[in-house]
Length: 312
Image 1 (spheres, rainbow, N blue to C red):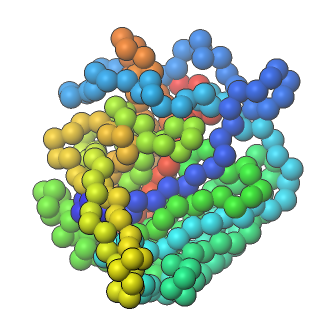
Image 2 (image 1 turned 45 degrees about the vertical axis):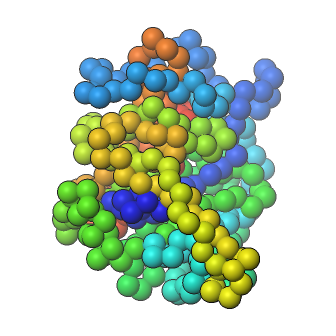
Image 3 (image 1 turned 90 degrees about the vertical axis):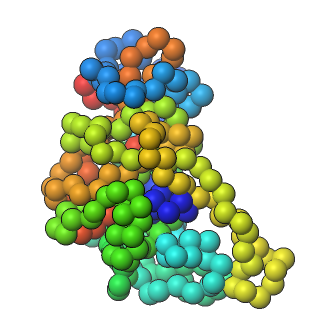
């Protein structure tokens, strides 16, 4: 994982849910008309992209997922370390993952499976209401910086939902990687990292991310690959290839990965927004918005999936 990709942010993680897409009248998701006026980014910041997000699947934008039957949903995720994100060494620290609803009420707890064949897999069942699972997941492990994960769209499918990959970092690792980008991590403040995703969970290119009303200080990342390594050092044929993310210091908008990060955010609730051009000649329109709770000396990861309403 590109050394500042997890950086200033600690992790290539995301919450991915089954998103609602337009259905027949009277059925499926509740949508607002695309002809309605939505928020735009004005004035456009210096270095704003001329490219568009036309290749992204945005059919679900403006739509709320259809109600689901109350019951349980299965969350699935993996816990790995930043120093070995591909689990090539087959060594994992003990950790804990907890799921909370929007009000902060604990719903379930899980522990990563350290068996070499499982690779840190964690899965557990949580109750959901008609609107699906709206909340966040919190990852902790002794010696590593705590990490929270949340999505802007609810998880609605009763089948196993991928919660993402949690790459745990130590304080020293974060400081070293941030220093490469000319950033000094300040104690008592937090980090926000994430990605702008389309309705299928793929990264959106040419998006500008604004945090707390400003796009200054937001860092973006490009895709890169690392050489394969033999898994557990036993069988060269059992190799793993790393798909990493590398800091693009001069970049002022997302690449195809959709990834971004910003450090030294004051604790509290912070609004994170993504803007992009849905067609050539159009302004930078609001694609996603989330209110993220930043905790001192922790990493807050957010999946900026397409907005569910106008959210002016």
